Length: 112
Length: 111
Image (cartoon, rainbow over all chains, first blue to last red; front, side, top):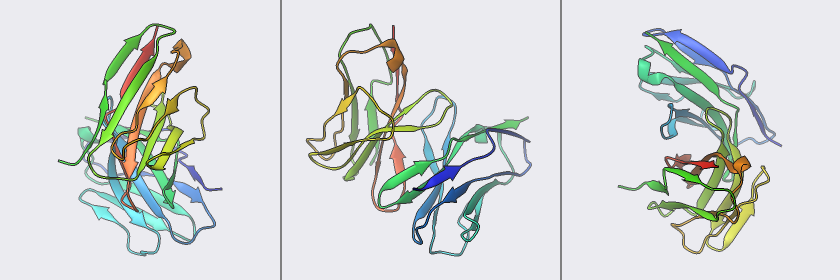
């Protein structure tokens, strides 16, 4: 069975600095998808970034990028130039055949 | 604009009442999901559907039921609400490897 682990329950970062959120997963599958979702306080959960496992190139979306290490089963999220609006819960997720496994989340607080 | 809608946004209801949480999406997605989430905590899958007339229970045991009579509509029903049902309920849909689209959630309080 697949598992997703986010080992950092809470993190904080100063505004304009860079922070990395960790995510590891366990699977015997070779082709799958990985996602990072952002859930701001009392607001809708939105997709931040997605990675297809068969693509070696790390996905990037503006200030958000991932470090995808398939052999190590690691999928960390880097947020550059952190902004106050980045304060949120961040969930890592694994998907195969429409079945999603979510991590327990990391609460990120950006400090002014 | 294609999206997923949940109503109501907030609901406070008395113990023993029957409630239905609505979820509709305009994207034509076959796969839809219901999650239960206490504020700021992890997500627990309670129901999912891979198409019309197909529903399955998720990982977390729930006293709720769901139906999927139309592709776009996936309501969740609690026949008799209890204080232990107080939580946030998130609906989502997906297609292929594009990830979930989540609704805004329904925050339910049972008093």
